[in-house]
Length: 104
Image 1 (cartoon, helix red, strand yellow):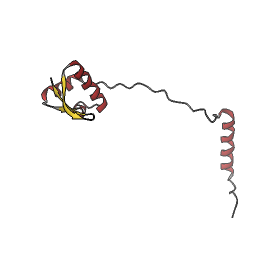
Image 2 (cartoon, rainbow, N blue to C red):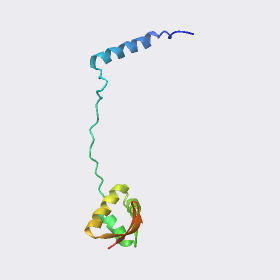
Image 3 (cartoon, helix red, strand yellow):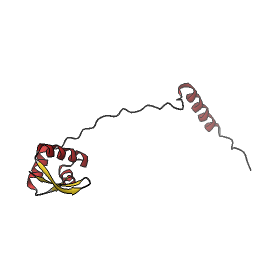
Image 4 (cartoon, rainbow, N blue to C red):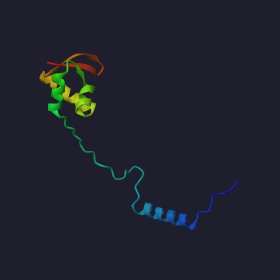
Protein backbone atom coordinates (compact mmCIF):
# COMPACT_ATOMS: atom_id res chain seq x y z
CA UNK A 1 0.00 0.00 0.00
CA UNK A 2 2.85 2.31 0.30
CA UNK A 3 6.55 2.42 0.63
CA UNK A 4 8.80 3.72 3.32
CA UNK A 5 8.26 7.33 4.27
CA UNK A 6 10.91 9.75 3.10
CA UNK A 7 12.97 11.05 6.04
CA UNK A 8 13.21 14.73 6.78
CA UNK A 9 16.64 16.34 6.24
CA UNK A 10 17.29 16.46 10.00
CA UNK A 11 16.44 12.76 10.43
CA UNK A 12 18.58 11.83 7.42
CA UNK A 13 21.52 13.74 8.88
CA UNK A 14 21.16 12.02 12.26
CA UNK A 15 21.02 8.61 10.60
CA UNK A 16 24.12 9.41 8.55
CA UNK A 17 26.05 10.51 11.67
CA UNK A 18 24.96 7.40 13.53
CA UNK A 19 26.19 5.16 10.71
CA UNK A 20 29.52 6.99 10.58
CA UNK A 21 29.98 6.59 14.35
CA UNK A 22 29.06 2.92 14.09
CA UNK A 23 31.68 2.33 11.39
CA UNK A 24 34.44 4.17 13.28
CA UNK A 25 34.22 2.73 16.77
CA UNK A 26 31.35 0.35 16.58
CA UNK A 27 31.21 -2.76 18.65
CA UNK A 28 31.11 -6.18 17.14
CA UNK A 29 28.21 -8.50 17.70
CA UNK A 30 29.75 -10.51 20.54
CA UNK A 31 31.58 -7.56 22.11
CA UNK A 32 30.06 -5.79 25.11
CA UNK A 33 30.21 -2.09 25.81
CA UNK A 34 31.87 -0.56 28.87
CA UNK A 35 31.14 -2.96 31.70
CA UNK A 36 31.10 -1.48 35.16
CA UNK A 37 33.34 -3.24 37.59
CA UNK A 38 31.57 -4.86 40.51
CA UNK A 39 32.56 -3.54 43.88
CA UNK A 40 32.28 -5.30 47.19
CA UNK A 41 29.75 -3.53 49.37
CA UNK A 42 30.14 -4.24 53.02
CA UNK A 43 27.51 -3.28 55.56
CA UNK A 44 28.66 -3.06 59.13
CA UNK A 45 26.19 -3.94 61.83
CA UNK A 46 26.27 -2.01 65.09
CA UNK A 47 27.19 -4.93 67.35
CA UNK A 48 26.52 -3.04 70.57
CA UNK A 49 23.00 -2.15 69.53
CA UNK A 50 22.37 -5.69 68.27
CA UNK A 51 23.67 -7.29 71.48
CA UNK A 52 21.51 -4.96 73.62
CA UNK A 53 18.45 -6.06 71.66
CA UNK A 54 19.41 -9.74 71.85
CA UNK A 55 20.06 -9.67 75.60
CA UNK A 56 16.83 -7.81 76.36
CA UNK A 57 14.57 -10.21 74.45
CA UNK A 58 13.49 -13.71 75.41
CA UNK A 59 13.37 -14.97 71.83
CA UNK A 60 13.96 -13.27 68.49
CA UNK A 61 14.21 -13.89 64.76
CA UNK A 62 16.59 -12.68 62.09
CA UNK A 63 13.93 -10.29 60.81
CA UNK A 64 13.59 -8.63 64.23
CA UNK A 65 17.34 -8.15 64.54
CA UNK A 66 17.40 -6.68 61.04
CA UNK A 67 14.59 -4.24 61.83
CA UNK A 68 16.11 -3.14 65.15
CA UNK A 69 19.61 -2.55 63.78
CA UNK A 70 18.57 -1.09 60.43
CA UNK A 71 20.49 -3.49 58.21
CA UNK A 72 19.49 -6.04 55.58
CA UNK A 73 18.25 -9.45 56.64
CA UNK A 74 21.26 -11.14 55.04
CA UNK A 75 23.64 -9.03 57.15
CA UNK A 76 21.68 -9.77 60.32
CA UNK A 77 21.66 -13.47 59.42
CA UNK A 78 25.44 -13.51 58.97
CA UNK A 79 25.83 -11.80 62.34
CA UNK A 80 23.56 -14.35 64.05
CA UNK A 81 25.40 -17.25 62.42
CA UNK A 82 28.64 -15.87 63.85
CA UNK A 83 27.04 -15.59 67.29
CA UNK A 84 25.66 -19.12 66.95
CA UNK A 85 29.15 -20.48 66.27
CA UNK A 86 30.57 -18.54 69.23
CA UNK A 87 27.82 -19.86 71.50
CA UNK A 88 26.32 -16.47 72.36
CA UNK A 89 22.90 -17.50 71.01
CA UNK A 90 21.19 -20.82 70.41
CA UNK A 91 18.58 -21.88 67.90
CA UNK A 92 15.43 -23.12 69.59
CA UNK A 93 12.92 -23.53 66.77
CA UNK A 94 11.74 -22.56 63.34
CA UNK A 95 12.21 -24.06 59.94
CA UNK A 96 13.35 -23.29 56.39
CA UNK A 97 15.46 -20.22 57.18
CA UNK A 98 12.92 -18.71 59.62
CA UNK A 99 14.60 -19.79 62.82
CA UNK A 100 13.90 -18.60 66.32
CA UNK A 101 16.90 -17.79 68.51
CA UNK A 102 17.43 -17.31 72.23
CA UNK A 103 20.32 -15.65 74.04
CA UNK A 104 22.61 -18.21 75.68
